[in-house]
Image 1 (cartoon, rainbow, N blue to C red):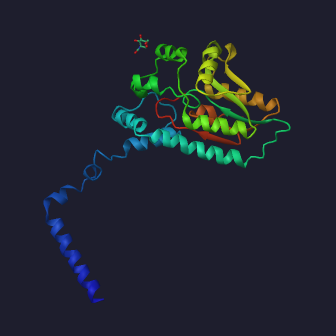
Image 2: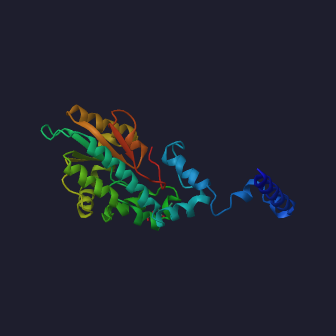
Image 3: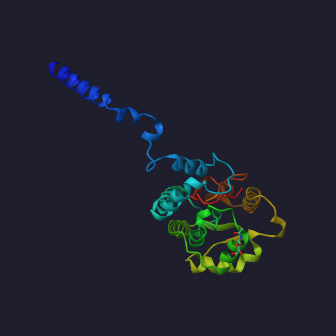
Length: 255
Ligand SMILES: *[C@@H]1O[C@H](CO)[C@@H](O)[C@H](O)[C@H]1NC(C)=O
């Protein structure tokens, strides 16, 4: 008890000495406690866009452009996509796949899911500018997007587990050949069907178009077990997968 009292008085002495220093008092306002180096604002912004609290958004807020660049350069992006992949595979392994009827389906998106357009976005300020359809199309037609490594792993494992793979993309039917070639060059093979936007789908919101395509698969007797996409519009709407896996993408939002 005596030692506790002496510790307390020593602590009081230290505190008094500290508080009497004008520097410590000036440190009290919040902006000084949260230094610019570890300001959580951009992390909070990223959280809000990833979980869809933010809803639709056009471009990265200017103060967070460097933060997003660092997110990609530091390996946190790859780490987050590996985390999504690990949980996807944990679920995939838990499914009793009926290889007899071959009707257990897994859906993947293309851009920022199977393929990564990071080389394009690195040259275009990581989505800090509004979407440019012309330059984006030019990039797509080059057909050189690499695989997102964690997605290639998930793709190959779910295929091996016996799931039928459907690739549903917002890319248009006119980009079928270049998309197929790009997917094959990136290491993907053996999908059941690659579904692109046809003329009837033009102008449809991604959520509606993708939901309709899932509904069609269900009509054909498939059970949509898993769905992997970087956009909420890949995953929500109607006719949902048993489990949907949101991959990271703090560069752009497709409604
Ligand atoms: C969009 O990209 C095209 C092709 O690279 C370029 O010529 C054009 O200036 C860009 N538009 C804007 C608004 O940056």
